[in-house]
Image (cartoon, rainbow, N blue to C red; front, top):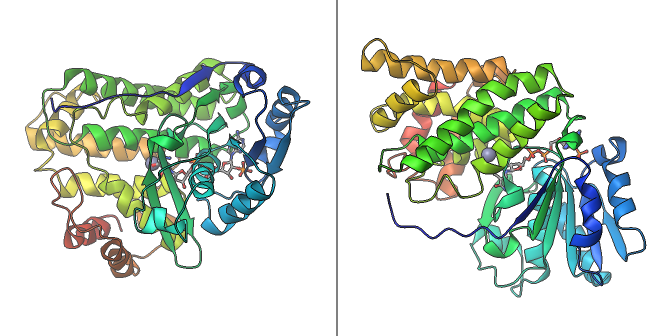
Length: 385
Ligand code: NZQ
Ligand code: ZN
C-alpha cells in the first residue's frame, strides 16, 4: 500500500426528513444563496422543504444551473452573490448544481483577473466561500469531495479543479428526494458510481486489501441495487443503498494508498464537450473499450474483479477477463445505458477531433501507468464505435 493522508471533514446528514436539519446546520447569521438547476426541485417538493427550513433567514435564490454546469451561467451567479454580499452557498440538486456551486465559491474569492484560470491554468484556489448541499441525485460523490467539473460553452471545454476549500461543510442526503429521478438519471448515477470505483480499483495490485474489498462491496451493491432502483423506484432501502454507495465511491476512501486511472473520465469529458452526451453515457462507452485495450496492464486486477465481483472462476485467464469485461458491458446495457458510440447515433467520425482536444488539454499520458497516449486513446475510441 502506498503512503497516504486521509481527511474528509464533510458532515453527512443522511435519511428521511433530514432537509429540516438545515435550520440548525446553517450558521445563524449567514447571508445564504440557494443555488439550483432547471426546476426539478420545484416539482418534487425539495425546494418547499428547503424554504420551510430556511424561513425567516436572509436568503437569495439562483436557479438555472444546467447539467454540465456552464461557466457563463456560474459567472452570473457570482455577480448576484457579490451584489447581495453572500457569505454562504447552499446547493440544492444533482452533481452539476453542487459542482457549479463549488466553482462559484472559489470564483467569489479569486484574486486573479479571470476565474476561468482556476480550470484552464490550475490557478490555485486560496480561499472559498463556505458551502453545503442538499443532494438529489446519487452519482458523482461531489457531496463529499473537493472536485468540480465546469464546462465553457463558447470554447467546447469541460475542465475540472480540485480544492479541499470547496468540500461541502455538510451534505444532506435524503434518499426520498431521488424518487422523482427520471430513469435515465437513475441509470446514469449507477454507472457513474460504478466507474468511479473501477477508476480506483482496476489498476494494478499494491496489496491494499481494505480498499480492494470496499471497492468490491460498492460494485456488488451497485450491481444488485441498480436494476432494482429502476424496477422499484419507491423502494426506500434500495434508494438508500444506491445513494450511500455513490458517496463512498468518490469520497476519497477507496482511493487511499492505491494507484488511480481516470482515463475513462478524461476521454469521457471530451465526448460530453463535443457531443453533449451525459457524463455517465460517455463512461459506459469508454470503460469496456479501455479495459479491452489495457487488459495486459490491468491483468491481475481484472482477474480479481472477474472472480470477486462477477464470480467468474472457471476457464483460462484470458477467457475470464473477457467474460468480466462482457459482464460489465451487459450490466450497463441492462441499466439502459448504451456501451458504444453507435448507441447514440455517432459513427466515430469525430474521433480525431476528440483526440485533438485531449492533446490540447494535456491529456497525453493518462492512466495509472501514464501509458494512455493520444494514440492509445484513439484506439480505445475506435474499439468503442
Ligand atoms: O436541473 P434539474 O431540473 O434539477 O434536473 C436535473 C438534471 O436535468 C435532474 N435531477 C436531479 N435531481 C433530480 C432530477 N430530476 C428529478 N428528480 C431529482 N431528484 O437530473 C439531471 C441531471 O443532473 P446533473 O446534476 O447534471 O447530474 P449528475 O449528478 O450526474 O452530475 C453530472 C455532472 O457532475 C460531473 C459531471 O461531469 C457532470 O458535469 N462530475 C462531477 C464529479 C465530482 N464533482 O466529483 C465527478 C464525476 O465524475 C463527474 O465528472
Ligand atoms: Zn464520473
